[in-house]
Amino acid sequence: MSSDGAESRPTTHANFDHNNTNGSGDRVTFISSDRVLFNLHRKNLDVTAGVFPGPEFVFASAPPAQESTAIPLQEPACVLEILFQFVYPDRRAKLTESLEFAVLAQVAETAEKYQIYSAIDACEQEFERRWLPQYALPILTHALKHGIIKLIDASALCLCITPISEVLNQGLPLQYAARWSKYHEDCRNLLFKDAEAELGTLYLSMELDNTHRSCVVAALDWMYDTSRKIRSLNDIEHYTYKPDRYRHDEFSPRCSIDLDMSGEQSCYVLEQALVSVKRRIVEIKEISFWDCYIKPIPAPKPMPQ
Ligand SMILES: [Zn+2]
Image (tube, rainbow, N blue to C red; front, top):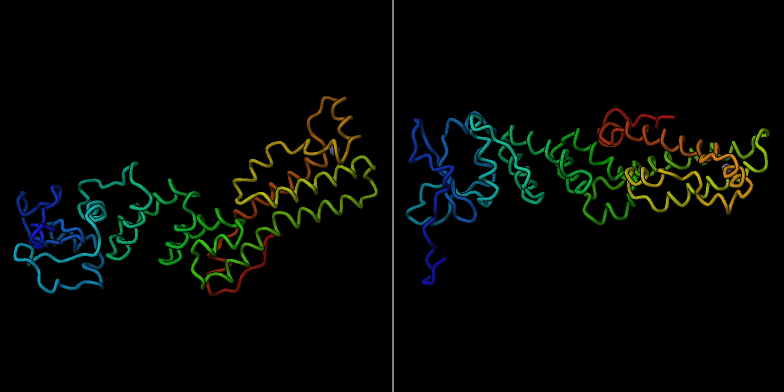
């Protein structure tokens, strides 16, 4: 805005100045929220966009003369310049590697609003390829809002054992709280409780000698400790990297001596606990948050055994 209070003349975006370029057909002009003009071919919009302009569309009450024919949009130019690439398929639109998550999120939301399908697809792929698990929660929220099943499942998996208070406090829509709570509980139970039960059965086994009974205690302690520390399935990769000797000296000194003497690195009881947890990671990855907890019909299927 200039010093006398009048708004400065809006500029036209260099890549979308089709009033001054070759080609035929009707043009339509949009003005971004930060007053940049975009001249586009109407026929391209007809083909590529499901809704344009969106439901919020209103004419400016007193548009300055030079932009009187421009349709005002709520988005800034930095978002529209990316989105409008997809109105021209012959330009092979793509999302650049330097695109920040916050801008991508705006582009994705705007693409949904105006139903520019090729941009919607590109944003979904980019969310999954570059921004999971770092931005799993905003991606999950976006995916739930728009019913993007593949992205719902991929982002939910990243958060499935994150403390539930954190997921809710950071913005999971409250209408999903109960279903998320069940999903989270099922995943944690599957990961640790069932594995603990297996170890409990092993502990009571008549075939187990006292040395290896102590190893079961070491394995249970490792599981308990890990279950308190991990925030995602990826973390487990870290904790399961080499748990074999985890506090073995303390819980099972006899086994430690045997391992040292034999040159072995792995105790078969701890190995079994590790295999058990890893098997359950695979099972958790097969649970679809959408299918089991969100989709209204049919009723949630039983958890895999
Ligand atoms: Zn052992």
